[in-house]
Length: 203
Image 1 (cartoon, rainbow, N blue to C red):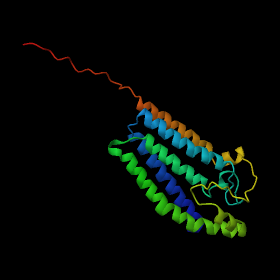
Image 2 (tube, one colour; image 1 turned 90 degrees about the vertical axis):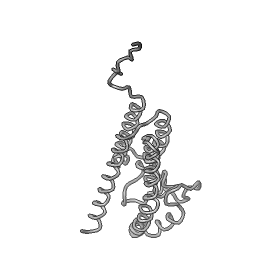
Image 3 (cartoon, rainbow, N blue to C red; image 1 turned 30 degrees about the vertical axis):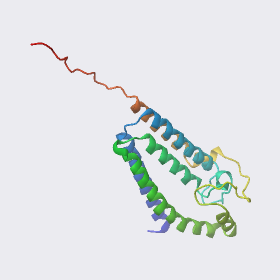
Image 4 (cartoon, one colour; image 1 turned 180 degrees about the vertical axis):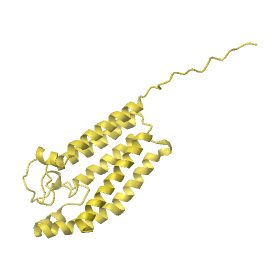
């Protein structure tokens, strides 16, 4: 199997596993309104970053240094991490299991996924874009944004066509749907009334 085929297969498996994780987390959740509200704010912040980035990104064909790419080389991954954090806060589980799962997700992301990505992707982009990528790589952090935007950033504006091509609108729909479901669960009224017969006192 060639590298491209392997990458696509591995990416599909990762996304499938992530989707399954979120479905199970949401279905088992016992949310409370305050936690849903806090989690939604965090997830919305992450989606705002992704939505902004998706309107600039044209994968591989261009070296994107505009928009959020002026501050971080991987705004889509930063957004995804914030969304995962928000969802885990919203989807409360007994014994803080949701926060334990979130900690495990952080460990996988920071100790496996990002180091692997930083070994593979810069080499690929450097082969395509050469010295221009080297300058960008040295000036802009991999994930956590800098407060000093990239000095040689392009002036490319946000494009709805690119956002749609990157299918980011579906992420917005998914976050809203999950939030509404968890909010409904947080206020859910039991379907069956209490039919326990009254206690009869006396002899």
